[in-house]
Image (cartoon, rainbow, N blue to C red; front, side, top):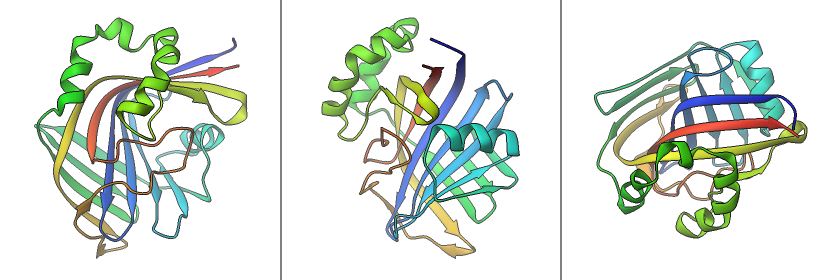
Length: 201
């Protein structure tokens, strides 16, 4: 195995009635410091990355697949169960609610184990059964391997999403799943506590 990059923070997955789907990463710790990014898939299938710097955009676009990439100011805050995002064409305000059964089950697993790459590789098929479309390990772009260690999960209970200044529609399931990488997010809008590990194979 080669170089290893670790991103520690939260991932929110949000769907709208218009078909726009957004995956927001709010990273407290990363090789690039604290930052946020947004992956957007439109109803047409077009995949867009909104990244705060060229360096972050280069890394993420080398790991995932996009049809276009924009470097914009990405302001994201998650506190008191409220997620707010202002990123170029996207504005989002989401309320984070209770834990579903899966979130309660995730809390039982010690975090040191929940984020360990060997564990994540072993449970990846089970993750796909518990949350269709989701995987905890797989092959990423540029010959990299990627692991998602989820240690907590909350439902998103409500959201207001604007795209290019227009309301994107009511909160809706993330269907079809997003296709930036080997895994989608849960179909039900949610906020996950995540450690993402990317390894150069």
